[in-house]
Length: 104
Image 1 (tube, helix red, strand yellow):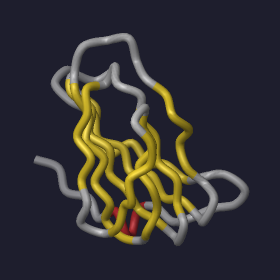
Image 2 (cartoon, rainbow, N blue to C red):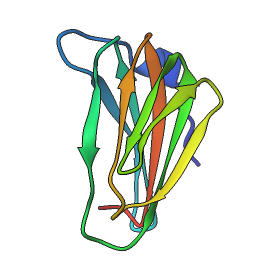
Image 3 (tube, one colour):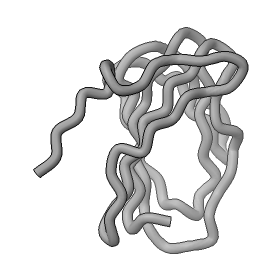
């Protein structure tokens, strides 16, 4: 077993986002991203099979995708195929947890 507190382990930084690899195994990967307003991950995709989730732990921002922009706030989860274009952008300080299965 492994235990980690994301609030103690990773903060925020300028001019780019802060990331922390929480877990990496042959089955799935978990990454914590912390974004200041205006920071994020641009729309992108991966040419592999699998799925991902983006869970907003705190803050406010936008989920980005091929079909447009969706509001994102604490408690929201985006679930998508990895091959589908996806991204995220912070409006306020924003902590997200991304899970990728299988890991890429």
